[in-house]
Image (tube, rainbow, N blue to C red; front, side, top):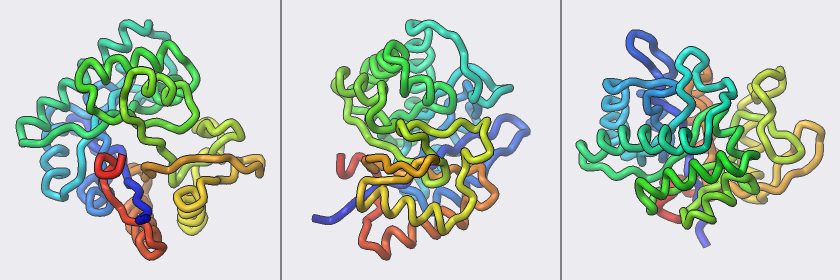
Length: 256
């Protein structure tokens, strides 16, 4: 059986005169894109340009909704009711869906951003609100999050397809959650180390946590962050290594 994995990146995070990331280069190496929807980053012009960029590079398009926090780039925890979160998610998915459909594309997936992503991993009410919002817009959308989280349970309860995500450049805790960016060991900066970890996650379903313990994972899609100075070189190297090891890179909808 052929082994397949999706490579995704968070892009479209520029805003007005501010430029973030190397989107034009990173889309050459990924198979799916998570496009910011205007709350934590992005704006209407950036959203449309990013959709067109993905279309030209045959990259599947997904919504990347976050907290309404441009100043904090969506990385600050916010105390917002589940009903409000549901409305915020529907609003953001709807905005990107309109841009995608105006160019003849269908949304493939939804992956929440930053603090919202991390909070939904452990908060059942928040996760349920997000899953219900996704299903309310389109029950065929794939929900993307880490395995064995409240978000996975919520997605399955809502009848959504679920893609288990792993991170190429992030360390994890023994419970499988991401190490907070507050700590110096949150990011993996050595590309060789990151590639070895990804290969093991994809082929063996295991990864080493920061304390040295072994954590079981499922890798349907691998996130490569596009705002890292070495992101393009890293994405190219990761894709090459995966393909050389018999792993086919493909959009998640093609095998889930």
